[in-house]
Image 1 (tube, protein in one colour):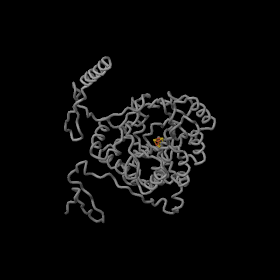
Image 2 (cartoon, helix red, strand yellow; image 1 turned 90 degrees about the horizontal axis):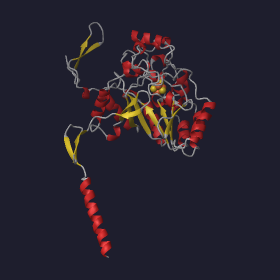
Image 3 (cartoon, helix red, strand yellow; image 1 turned 120 degrees about the vertical axis):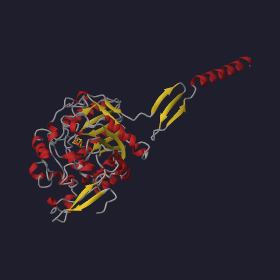
Image 4 (cartoon, helix red, strand yellow; image 1 turned 135 degrees about the vertical axis):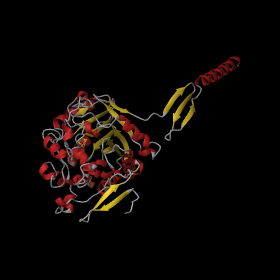
Length: 427
Ligand code: SF4
């Protein structure tokens, strides 16, 4: 019997060719490795041609939306079967074949599976759950538009997504009709934006704006671009992760016309970074689009520092700058996904100083009820005394920083000014 380097042993199972893997001692968290990326087309789709598989419209048309389809692809556990049954009339079930191909068919705790397959826990509504946890409806002057911060707005252009994330904060809106903003609404939005000259930044979101056809998306971007005070256009999307086939040459060529245009991509786990996703992000980056990531902190999915560290490091390698980690919002039926805020702080503590600064995102809590994003950081300022600040570094060592002596500086300056004045008088 040989003990492997990860402290496990493989015991042959009598009468079979299989082995039983036993972990002798748990490995320290830092040495553990998150699940590896696997991009294998499941047997269910073996007859599909490569051309079809690479076509984003084929992927959308063949989304898995029922228990009957799903049971042929995954070994569903009772918690999932019940969850799927109860998801009717709530947040819809939809998974692209591509995203389903990343799921471990026999492990219900697979991080990709946990994000997209409904579970019975969604039926539990805690007393903190809210229909509109970020208070967006309250800050909506025109349907489809959220105007909370002084110089930027959020424009919800569709309620459709390629995959419906079970923790979605906009579950009250997404997936209900799978429709884009109506022309009438869009005209109202444009009228509002033209008369609000302080707005210099429009973030297109939804749903997922990249689920619109190029022509419709271009119409929206071009009409926003001609408003003189709108400086920046941004797109919030998860398509490069759940439907990377959507990033076509035609899309990138169209987006390039509307620079400065940025993209925030919703990544959750390192397992999502497949060869196809790398190609998609590479094409967007080559199109001159600055890419940032947004990640929701999720219990049992990415709440371990070693998972988040792997994610942010892999993101930098594909030219996506880790931008935000969000504390999971108080959306209905999502308590089982929520971690404590201390968990998020601990993750930042394990990133800051331990890896490239570019890889360290800002951890934020979107204040319940509409207070906006509040950054939450580990405490690095130990104390502030007269003339000095005591700081702590990433290793826990403390250092003193002497503050400039403002009073002496002012006194020295006024003496200097007096001398110049007296010279002028004597002259
Ligand atoms: S992609 Fe975004 S909007 Fe769509 S379901 Fe997921 S979290 Fe919600």
